[in-house]
Image (cartoon, rainbow, N blue to C red):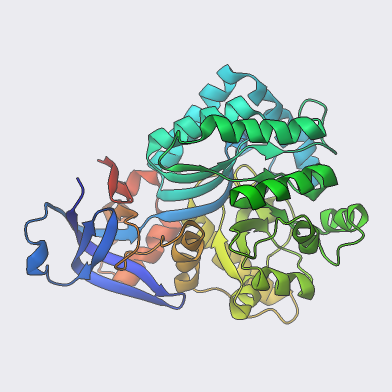
Length: 425
Ligand SMILES: [Zn+2]
């Protein structure tokens, strides 16, 4: 179905401070893009097939800028540990299992199925160091219909033997992975994925920088997640003025049209914030993960005020689930704690801002994505909130807020990515 019309209560972020509502309106999809939101259906679209969703809410698909597919299997456990402890006790031993393709098929199958059922339409996904399991994950994500970027992880130091690659091996396997998947997918793109500076030698980082220049591929990694880690990077890269500058030194920190997303950014120096902005690097704000791993609270208000680009990430399994609605609620909550606890912190985030981060803010990493406005790729979810019943009427904004705080995948009736129907139920 190429061209069609959805009818329902349309809501999208116009700016980060302002929703655009069209109650009982018409959302027109033409050739995979929104042709606009209308209170009355214009005559020229009258022949398009129409799906009438009654009183349901129709929202842009949600965008997850940071999630680890191989950690999905142990989500909801180890939630009382801190970052480096959690990596060694939980994340690394689990990731070693993806050398076994049978295990990978089962675990990634569950991940792909649940991502498909969620309100998320786009995601930046970490796999593991294993080339074959990464390709398997990409095959599975392609089959969901979602638009994703998936990265084979590079790691050649400071990790358990079972996960450590040889330096040459790390680069060769990355090149082989890119060759093997070339032309294989419509919706699944590769993304260069150095795990983080402590796990990647200078030689691997330099090699990835070269590969990025030659290929133009996007980049994802972690930045300034906790203070211990940032201090470690200062030791490993004494030539860099800040953690971000270490990535920049290897050619892996945005600028010159390079699309880069960095998870966390909880502890930036003033210099690092300025560099994030100047290089157009996206911050993947992962509030639940930052809470669970005692990382801290990212200065999102300051980022927004300074013009740094920000979206949301679930960071499974440091975040316990794949819901970006939950990430919106968490972003509001932690911003309130920061407002109370951190000296000079700006005012807490509003619902409008949190919704913007989880749609249009993160969507910009994928291009014209994250909005129902004309010209955007047609990613949409239909939410039926009748199951969240209460006596008395609610405004549409109140209904949306309750969806953010209370809904689950069972409330999603339909989902579309680039105008393609993912499911209707
Ligand atoms: Zn992460």
